[in-house]
Length: 285
Image (cartoon, rainbow, N blue to C red):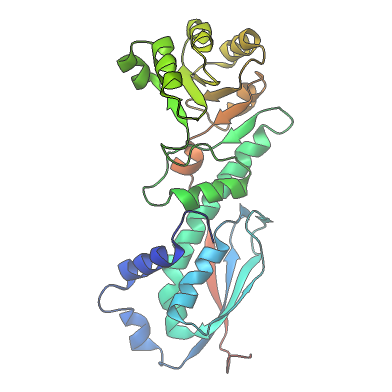
């Protein structure tokens, strides 16, 4: 479903965490074993949806016969009150799956929704929004999927799919030029990107063979100077403390990319609920 992510294992572990050893004792105590249930998942605020297929798997794991009609697609802008999914199935099973399904859907849609706001803020500029590795351990694949649904492009998924020399690498290696030279000599076959936090480091990095520069914590005026100095020789990425209210000015400096950790690290969950609609008489209702 999502490349690099074991959906079955995730659903199993999430449900085990929620059900514990005794299962959903409340539903078992209040609802007949054969009772059936119809419900809708609805957005309670305007959102960009992500994770619908994943949410559906929680209900299927609890009731193989559940009938699911998805009414929206990941990446779509959904207004408050619009239904995302209709469900019909065993009442106990659906209520037992509800929280795990909603937690996942709310979290991923929160990432997609915040990401879309950043994308819209730089619309009309040349800049492309990137995500980062600032993700919850174990959830990177689905969080980066949600960022894509919001309109961002994925940066590195893992440490092995790109050389990115950060300030601590530079410090240990003995300087920007030394770090880049060592990385190029390693001949990994990967693009070598290096972080620079001062204008003075740019020519040193380029002379050593850097393929791309990460301009760290530079204000828009400094970024403009960097863009002019580099003059298109390599792609430029701005990063560090980027916020919704500052990203437009950063984009207008002329950089090619802007990476924003907060779209995965700090996105608030959106409000999505599951509302009872009717009690179906059978599987075909």
